[in-house]
Length: 162
Image (tube, rainbow, N blue to C red):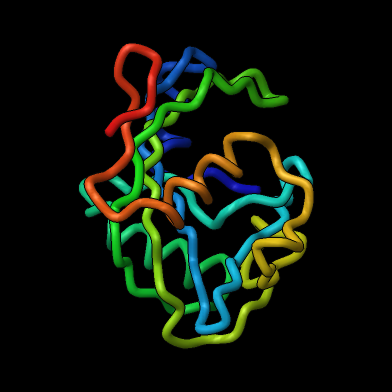
C-alpha cells in the first residue's frame, strides 16, 4: 500500500521519526441500517473506511474522497461524531505515526460497495449484530458514530465526554 506523495516527501526529511497526522474515518450507514466495512490490505483487519487527510483538505471532503476511492460508495457526511487519538503506530518499515482521527457518521447515497483500490482486501455491508471481528477502537468508533446525537465525543482527562 503506497503512502501519499506528500507523506513520502516528508519522510525524506524526518526519516522514521514519529509523525503526527490527521485522519478521517467514515461510519457509513445504508438504508437497511447496515455499516460499510473494509478489510485492510496492510494488516488484514476489518475496519471503518478512512485515511490520511491531504494537506489543506477539509475533513468532510476527505471522508467523502476516502469512501469513493476505497469502496466506490458515494456518501454524505451527516455528523462529526468523535475526535480521538491513536496510540503510536509502528510500521514494518520502521516509520512511527500517531493519528488524530475525526470520525464522521455518513449516509450512503450511491455507488456499489467493492474493492476499489489496493488498500482493501474485501469490502462489505454488515448488520450490527453480524459484525466481523474488529479491534476495540473500531467498535468504539462505531458506537460513537451510531449513538452520537451531537456534540461530538471527545476525551478529556482520560474520560469520554460529553
